[in-house]
Image (tube, rainbow, N blue to C red; front, side):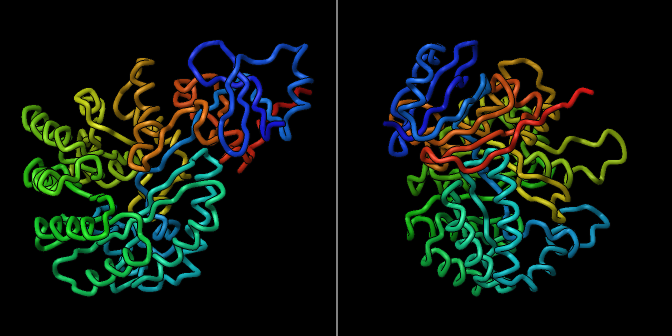
Length: 415
C-alpha cells in the first residue's frame, strides 16, 4: 500500500507521462504512466490518487527574497514621488504602529498567496530595529510555524535602516539570532559607514553560524559598489556559498568591462545574486524624462559566467512595490519580458531562477526523483517553458506527500 499516486504527470520536457508513487513522505517510484488495463490495480494500492492529466509537475518554487513584515500596507503610505528614499521614509513611519497581531495577519495573507501560486520555500527579511523591536520577528516566527505543513520559511534578521549608528538595532539583531533567526542581513547603502556595516553583519554570521543576505547597490550609479567589500569578507571568512545579495542594479549601469570584473568577483566567491524586477523597475530611473532605463540587472550574462542567479518578489502591496500577488511564475514572465528574452533555452534558464537556482540558498535539491521528499506542484501547462510564457496557474501542491492546496482548473461553459 502506498500513500499517494500522482498519475499522468509530465516531469521532463517531451511527451512522456509518468506515475509518481509516494510512501511515508518520500518518492518511492517514478514509472511510465500506467496503461488503462492496470490503472484500477494501481489505484487500489494507493490511499490517495491525483490525476495530473498530462500537466507539468515540478518541485515547486522558491521565493528567495521577500518582506512579509511590511507587506500590504499601501493604505498607510503616501506615495507621491515613487522613490526609494520616500518608500523607506513612509514605511518607517508605518512601522512604528506595527503590532505582532497586525504583522501576523498581513504576513499570513501573503504566505497564503504564495502557497496557492506554487511556492514551497520562502526567505523573508524581518526588520529588527527600535521602531518594531522584536514584534515583527515574533509574528513571523508564528507564521512560519502555522504554515510549515505547506511551505518552508527562512527568517532573516535584517538591519534595513543602518547598524553602525544604532546600538539598539545591534542588540535587537543579536536577540533575534539568539531566538532562532535562520540568517542575518544588512543594507550597507543606508548606513553612515557601509563597509563597517558589512563587517558587523559578517561578525554576526560567524558567531551564530548562519548565512548572510545583503541588499546592495540599489541605484543606477556605476560607482561606489559594495560588491568588492562583500567579496573580500566572504573570502576572508571562508563564507563561499553562504552569501546572497539582492537588487545590485548598479551592474546594469556599469560599462561592460567593469561589469565583467564585478561578475568575476561574485563567481569566485560563489555569491548568489537575486534580481527583483517589480521593485527595481518601479523605483529606478525616475530622474530620466526620456528613454527611462529598465533599472534592472540582466542576469543572463551573469548566469553564463557561472553565477547562481535567482528571481524574487521583494515587496507586495507597499511603497516599495504597490502591487503583487506572490506569483513567482508571473515574476519570471515579467523578468523575461523586460530582459527581452524569447528563445526556449533562455526561458528555461529563467525557470531555473525560481526553482533549481533559488533552492540553493535553502540547501534543497529542486528535483523530482526517487528518494527525495514528495514535494511538488501541478501547473496548468505541459512544460516549464509554457508555464513561464503563459503565467500558468498552479493547480495543486503536495508537501511530504500530502496535498496542501487546490486551485480548480477553470472551465468554459458553452451555450
